[in-house]
Amino acid sequence: MATQSAGARRIVSAAASGFAAITRAITAPGMRHHRRAMLTEQHRLHFDLLCKAMSDPALAAVLDTYEAEIPLEKQRQFLFANALYTNALYFHRIGALTRAELFGHLRVICQNKIFQEYWTATQHHRKSLPDTSEEAELGRMTDDLIREQADADSDEWWVVGEPPGEPS
Image 1 (tube, rainbow, N blue to C red):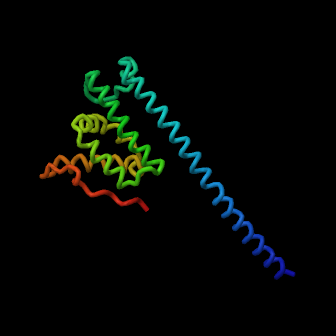
Image 2: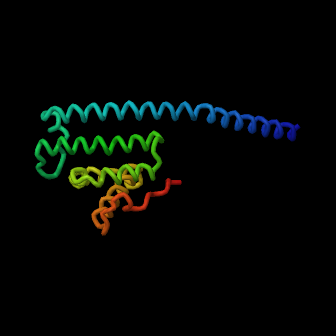
C-alpha cells in the first residue's frame, strides 16, 4: 500500500511539473508581449516629455540637473541627445537590436561632439545606477567607446572599438 502511495505521488508530482512547464510555455510569450507593450508606452511617454521640454524653456528648466551652468540652447541639444540614446536603448530592450547592433548605433552617435558633451555633463546621473544593471553596463560600454574614439589614431571611427558579445 505504501508503495502504491509513493508511486501515485511520483505520478502526480510529475504531472504537476509537466503542467507547470506547459503553463510557463504558454504564458511566456504573453508576458514578453506585455513587457514589450509596457516598454513601448514608457518610451512614448519619455519621448513626449522630452519633446515638451525641448520646445518650452520653462519645462526644460525642470530637467536641468547638470553640475555646471548650461545655456538653454545647449540644454535643448542635450535633451535631443538623450532622446537619441534612449531610443537606441529602447530598441535593444525590446529585442530589435542585439548588443553588437546597439554598439554600432552608439558608435555613430558617439562620434558627434554635442553628444560627447551631453555624455560628459550627465556622467554623474549614471553614478546612481546599480553597477550590475544593464543600463550601467551599457553606460560603461558607451564610456569606453567615446574614450576609444578619442584615443584612436585613425579617422576611421566606424572601426573603433570591439562590439560586445551578448551577455549569458
